[in-house]
Length: 397
Image (tube, rainbow, N blue to C red; front, side, top):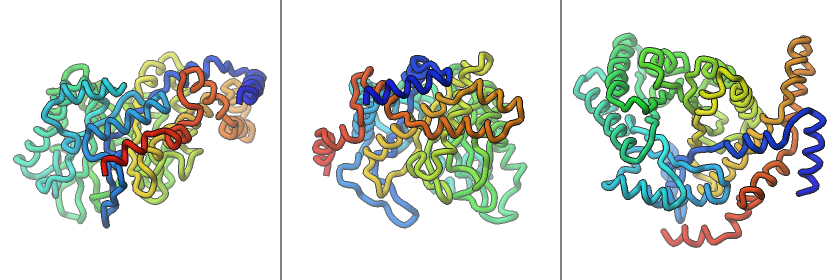
């Protein structure tokens, strides 16, 4: 692999790409793991048990720590409340620290309580809206206790039939509810607003697209940002364009990284369309290199949001991290100067070839060097299979 790395360095040098700078950017690349990905998940029809799957938040953090230890780039874990609720938050924070992790975004649950059947923050009943607001503010308090600076909010709110409720009234209720949350959160805490064009509401969704989420953020203030879930768009949506626009407005807070074939499938990232993920990362990479966007682009949080049912949960998460690293590395290898010349010359074929050249580059030697320097396994998947991690996990039953 060392010889392959040397050959890659030579190829990249001819393209004017500084490998040391690329490695530096890869060392800075971090991902956030979702606690919920390590527990049993299901479909609309059933929940399927995996032997050894995490049964509580402590075991979820334990599994996340294994992923971080083997990949070296996942130092935080997002929590979902009440799924991850505990009595002693300080103890949980200390446990995570012992495992080499910190607590990331706190995700309120506004879609499972029976009271939210007709909405949460948009519900016609003031009583229900107040209950939903109280839950989000509870999550704000939890975030303060565990040292998190992000509340990540997704609503299932919407309607199933024409005439069920009034669009503008629901919009007004949502704005008023979010304003209460925003104004009662600490001044250094961010509110990420996620959108989804359908499901579970089938006629209309209260936050159906990035424009609606952006509008809400604009009304709230600079600490409100948009969260992009890769599975939350209609087919054919140019997600990388959305990312570019949000970056230019400094309103991109983060991602929920996953893959999909049909709807919000929550599959392993890149399993269906890795080229799309590469093009999304390209926008992030380019924004990080622009002086006026560099700071906000580097603050974007990459969180995996996946439900592993047929795949082994820990292996699937390691696989996701490794592939995300590879695709981001490919985006770092784009010959920017050559691309700009082709764009200026209106040479469409040449411009696309620049991207294809980077996408089809074998970056495994680059990641080998990255991991070797960090003292972590060259092949994280192989290391997990050959280690004793699964023995301990299966003791759970």
